[in-house]
Image 1 (spheres, rainbow, N blue to C red):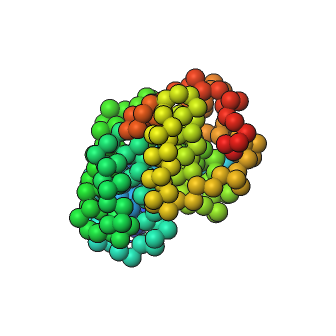
Image 2 (image 1 turned 60 degrees about the vertical axis):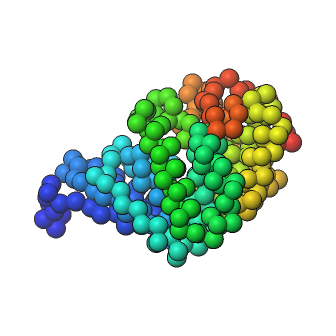
Length: 268
Ligand SMILES: NC(=O)c1ccc[n+]([C@@H]2O[C@H](COP(=O)([O-])OP(=O)(O)OC[C@H]3O[C@@H](n4cnc5c(N)ncnc54)[C@H](O)[C@@H]3O)[C@@H](O)[C@H]2O)c1
């Protein structure tokens, strides 16, 4: 046994998503599982990675390829730790908050639209409320589909293209949340093309992302460069791409009917 740690010991993960993921994975595997507690210190970890039981590490063959579904005994969130977070890292977390608003939570979306300045200024009360609403949405989805056989895929809104954008930059050029913001823009444009969103709704999505200072320029990303990463994604089954689109704002759907060949060249 390592340093005499036995099954009665546990791990406390204090940090961002990287610390949470590796601690959770070690906790799941050491002595076939010891308990662990998450104390997430980035906005992304507070609203996303600390909740839902996914733990993983990256290996040379790819991201998150070794891991386990393993829930912490508890998650403790102290929003005051966010005061030292860089604006860029805060924004990366906000992309996931906005995602919950787009796929399901209308109330959260209204908070994000109404209180943009207060949120960007990290006003304690509103930050606490958007974290609470985000976790509520994630928990509702994950409780119904823990192992991602169906509706949990909704949480991947913006992630199919986002992951491809991140991977094409070898995870060095752009943060996860920044890539997800671009991915949400692409998915909303496809939703518009498919007649699922109105022009007005698509413009609203664009405007909200811009209000949170996301760089929505897609000119540096060609479909031909992203394609290998899109089709390596775990959302592809039997060659078909399972894409999360919006059938109206705050109404995410998972579909495999969109033919990626119909993606207009002008979009990427
Ligand atoms: N398990 C899941 O469900 C899940 C979901 C989403 C993302 N993830 C994973 O989470 C990781 C990203 O997490 P992240 O965005 O938290 O990144 P991170 O853990 O790399 O943290 C970002 C940076 O912020 C610093 N930091 C952390 N807390 C701070 C604080 N309070 N003040 C100042 N600096 C602080 C860290 O040292 C780091 O440099 C990725 O590896 C991703 O794959 C996992």
